[in-house]
Length: 155
Image (cartoon, rainbow, N blue to C red):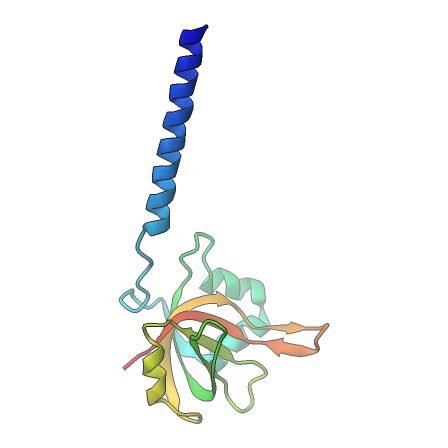
């Protein structure tokens, strides 16, 4: 009986050690370098918003990925607003005058300084990973913007 308990204890200890090692490896794994990744789609902010407002399911199939590695997009548009989120990351809103919604591009701490070179009204191209599409919120009676993360200016 003692021999069986010893074997069970060794198996459980081994499972804990292996599980911890895999968890640490996954946690410390390098993040996807969006700026060096190839671009999946190049389009305007107006086109991206129109795709989502026309058919959200089709747009999600086209631009989002189930495995977490969503598509890398280069979006060209007019800067409507520059702000900062609660994490100190710059957020650039690309939106045309007649667009119902826009594209919020959130920069990283490493790329924040690049935002200082742009101004409201300027046309820019921004590369990033799409996280969610535009939609109409009936409760709030307003349009929600497309969300792009890990953004940087395309030079």
